[in-house]
Length: 409
Image (cartoon, rainbow, N blue to C red; front, side):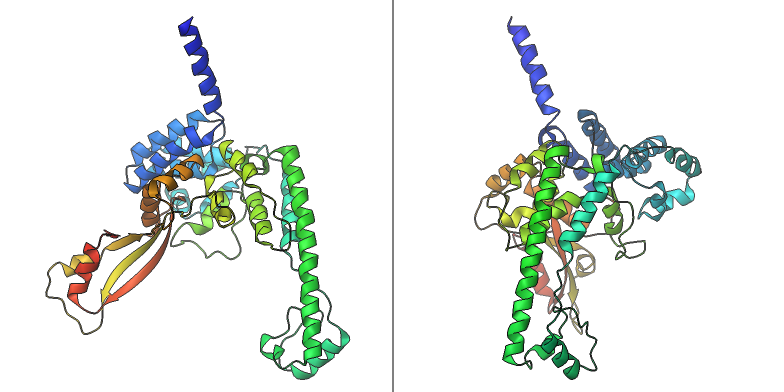
């Protein structure tokens, strides 16, 4: 009887675990990413395989990283299998030839042409109608409201800004340098028009935001498996190769719903709706990546007070300064990093909050942030970094900075 009870308990635990990405997916992905940081690609691939077997629909970002590990480990068939899984999420196979990493693979791998032919036969099972509807809602929410100027304002500005580019029907495009010169009664009209635009914008955002919540209620949280991945490189991205894989990373995720929720939270004019329970459940269900918390951390006291930010420092001597120290040549070629400090919670308390959301410990986030500060094709969230080149006026100071307790090599 005891064995039967234990067996039932074990099966129940497994059934629960398979739906909770924060427990049986993201912790293993974290281990895979740390193995990447250590350039141990065989070990990383093993962790990825373990994580993928635990859930039905892994994230495309993780397929991408695993595919890079596969080719670096000499497992080309595994790489192609992983890339096909990305295409099945709505990724255009032609985009691999523009990718930071795989454009080089496509140019040198003899099997690549056959892979492209096979991948084009894949029919992604995504809801394009729902995706297009959400995109339209987002455009409507983010389009500024414009109210035509009064006749008095329009005439005044035309007479006083003849050499300036000016859109006569847009109350927000009045040149800032001329606002101080505008008579008080006309400046009050500008304020009124801007307030009207703000109220109109708030009404639109409120209406569309409620529509999105209804969509979530009907369809569940629209994730990359439901509405697909982004399909085209953003127009603002630089041509490859990128210093880091920012342009490519856009294509291996779909943050549309997260962007809508974040944009709505910025608006002070609308009533705040607590979407954190919705988002946390989506994270547990594997429909949203824990990194979405970054966007909302400023709006809730329940979230981690730090996301693992580091300052990455590289030293240079000021002009006309020479160092007799023989070690200086090696020191100046290395990077050092300083961790962000919390003033309210201990690292243990922060880690408990982070891990409940599927995020890695701060120590791991710091390591990833430092790793990302150097060129890499991998798509890893982790912490964030700020690079800084520090000019040192004398040789002794650099040794003091390196020996400091918060500066780590």
